[in-house]
Amino acid sequence: MRRLIPLPPQRAAELVGRYAAVRAGARRRLLLGLAVLAVLLGLAATAAEVRPLVLAANLGRFTAYIAAIVPVLRPDHLGADWAEWYWGLPKWLSLLGETLLMAYLGTLLGAVGGFILCFVAAGNLVRSAALRFAAKRYLEICRTVPEIVFALIFVIAFGLGPMVGVLALAIHTTGALGKLFSEVVENIDMKPVEGLTGTGAGWVETVRFAVLPQVLANFASYALLRFEINVRGAGVMGFVGAGGIGQELLVAIRNFYYSDVSAILLMIVLTVFAIDLGTEKLRHHLIGGEGAR
Amino acid sequence: MRPRTASLRETALADLASLRVRYPDRFRTDWAGRLRNLAFLGAILGLAAYGMWALDFSLARIVHGLGRLAGFTLEMMPPSAGGRFGLFLHALAETLGIALLGTLTAAILAFPVAFLAARNVVGNPFARFAVRRGLDVVRSVDVLIWALIWINVVGLGPFAGALAIACSDFGAFGKLFSEAVETCDRRPAEGVVASGGSSLHRIRFGLIPGVLPVLASQVLYFFESNTRSATIIGIVGAGGIGQYLTELIRVLELQQVAFLILMILVTVAAIDWVSGRLRRAIIGGAAR
Image (cartoon, rainbow over all chains, first blue to last red; front, side, top):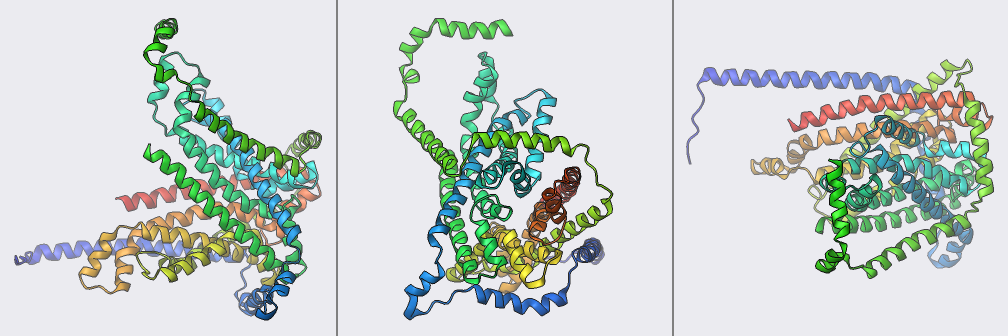
């Protein structure tokens, strides 16, 4: 093995000194950052009325609550206990189906809206800055206002019911997907577009034959991801009277129907799990299929 | 430019018959493919039609509602605080506080758990599986549901909101962080082990420096999205600006509603801007 030759002491000292200075600078910056964070946290804690004592005193209640919603399932009366726990199964299942349909329709309508608007919002396809600006701001408003706020307003305008939930989800989805879609469109390979423009194709033809084949798989993948998110969103639409299983859950939690809470929560969690797994498989298939081609 | 492109098209069209003969493959209609696409589209639309029927969609209601919405929009003008600007500002600060506290608490709690769920830290697949499924359960319960549960524990108010955001983000962070740890560069960790470091040294000096910027950027991103969630958490009574929003929408004080929505839009845009810059600075610093 080659022996290491030590540096001359003067250069070594210089290097060590410089290293120490850099470390000290980094540490100072870190401390400063932490101090800023601590101040912000202090402000946030005051604003949010954090009461650690209340939390500590009531933490027992949290565990007691969890313990209370866990159903009584005795091995020797499993069938009867199960039937008691899921006494409302037919009603809950139909509400769960309604929730899934809401998520599906909301995603589909939103995807159609986002699909139409994304080409208008994409910088590489639309030359008119004003049109692009308008489309982008519209999408921004759609996705910044949470869907449940739309639902609150729509419930008053359209009346109670799942249709309102669908419309609220659709508008929020338009904003979210429109942005993602337009980013996909902005990152396409422009050569096919130039080729089609060169043969004298119009705007719609260019989008159809040059842009669409490049982006469709990504669009579908994003829409599936959004469907997953919308299933969760549709689950709480009932809190404001916009349909789905949320209403039932709200009633159960507010009225302390403990075993109902766990029964409905378990159904929601399992559904979300199943949807997550399914869409993940489909998305890998879509994106993988594109990569292999 | 224009006449030449037109002539290219016209030449091609004039020569269409011979082009068809020369390139039969290009002009063949792919009936199977078309049929498959049509069936797929039909299934999607059929399910949509069934959904609309099952969920009582009615054109009359939509038209009537759109008319009312147009009326609401007119009534919203001009947005005005109705002399409650100070109150709204306080609620907005509360909202930001909820978002910041919730996000940070979730990040701090999820940080150690994420290492337990990462393949390159915990070898035992059963332990990893258990941690991951646990995180999934926490994640699949919506933030509003968490808020309802925490209200039962600490009472109405913003504290319940912060705890709710902390809970639902804990699951999301655990998953994202563990993915970041798994995709982290292996070499520093191997170097630490090769020079005689223990497995804790390996995590501290081999993994953490690599993942910290990624995690910080994710935390900032979630803070952004949590300012949005925190605005709605008041709908169930867990503090923040959502409480006023719900109340004012219910009593149709639409000018104030418009004002509140504008305040939320401006705040969210400001937070997006700041955190976007911070994120770019952090990621840029890591790349250097």
